[in-house]
Amino acid sequence: MKKTIAPQKRDKSLVPLSREHHFGLLFCWKLRQGLKNGADLEVMREYVRYFWNNILKEHCQEEEWLMERLLPHDDTQRTRLHEEHKLIETLVELIDDGSPMNKDLFKVLDKDLVDHIRWEERELFPYLQTIAPADDLELAGQLLEHKHDPRLDNFTQEFWIKNPDKE
Image (cartoon, rainbow, N blue to C red; front, side, top):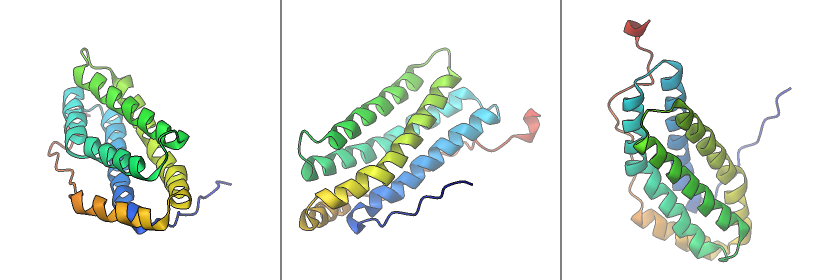
C-alpha cells in the first residue's frame, strides 16, 4: 500500500514560491517525456537554457534572499539550500555547454531538481514556518510579493509531445 503524504499547510508568504515549484516539476516532466519520445537533444538543451534564464535562476535567487533574511547564517537548512541551488546551476551549465549531447545530464537534472523541490516543500518550508517569527515571515513575504513578477513558461517548441512522424 502506497503511503500518501498529506499536503502541507503553507504560510501565505511562501505561496508564490510553492506555486513556482509546480512549474519546476512540470519542467522535469517535460524533460522526461522528451527523452522518452526521442526528442531532439538540441531543442531540449535550448529549453533548459530558456527555463533557467526565465524562471529557475530568479526563483533560486528569491529563495536564497528569503532564507538570508529568515534563517541564521550557520543554519544547516540554509546551507543545504544554497549547495543544492549551486548543484542545479552547475547541471544547467553542463547541459548548456555539453557536446556531444549527453542524455544522462538531463536525467540527473530531472532527478536532482524533483528531489530538491520535494525537500523544500516537505521539509524546508515547514521548518521555516516553525523557526521564523510570524512577523518576519509576513514582512519577507510582502517584500517578495512586491518584487516577484509572475513567471510564465512560453517555450514554443513542444518537444515533450510525441511526434507521430518519428514512429
